[in-house]
Length: 326
Image (cartoon, rainbow, N blue to C red; front, side):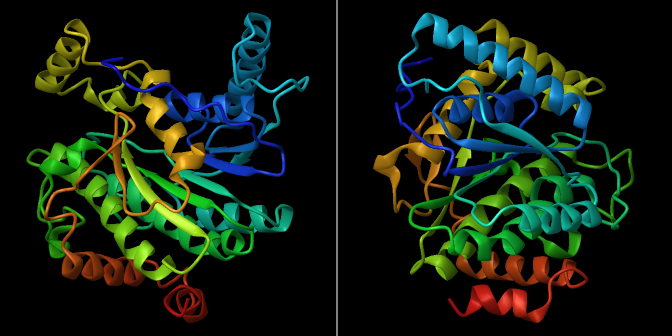
């Protein structure tokens, strides 16, 4: 689409362990399927076991179709190695339970793709007391990354974290005292701005992590998948202006299907030419420079401290020391 480069053909093996949040639908589904079709072992982390199992069966069927077509880069094994693990990012207890379950079953993790998210959600607070887009898009993933980093650090060379951000970060503002939107009512809550804020925080997290991981085997990058027709638009139904904008984007050909949206994420995850690449913000598989707000190191570190404060119930001092003293 629009001259976007094609996916790299990368042979992978089941020794390569991949974790995709929100891997049962949309961009996450296509990413999980295509990386599994390259031969890796993929774990899709999402809320619904039923939806995950349906997604995996659909992947298997599409895998057979791609093999029948002789699609280049598809592995030759009989079935894809894809499995489900339960994760609800709107519950930090669920994130903690996921981490403990993962660590009890797995000793390696090579790719952590933080894809799950919600957009333009009305003002709502999670059971943990955080604004829901802040927690689902950013804070839940922050906890997941922090607690799984020790596994990745011991998983061999070329381990990658990719954070699925959005160009909506350009609509953001940075005021941590207002990060939870509690000065708003449901009627005047700025849904686009708070969605953009959560995506800004992901890019800032990338820079914070890379400063701490610069001498390690783990790299962190971020992507904008484009305007993609997925379930993430389900919160648009009562937003007339944004519903019209999305429909117009489809009419003029600016909207991508889930596979087209996933290409940038897949490329950032598996392209061997991108080994050791850090602090890259990809759009249409090409690096763009994030804006000055996202690159502000003082604000990045303020966000890092704020995030640790939010998660003090779940992060012990030794968890942080493992990162800060690398």
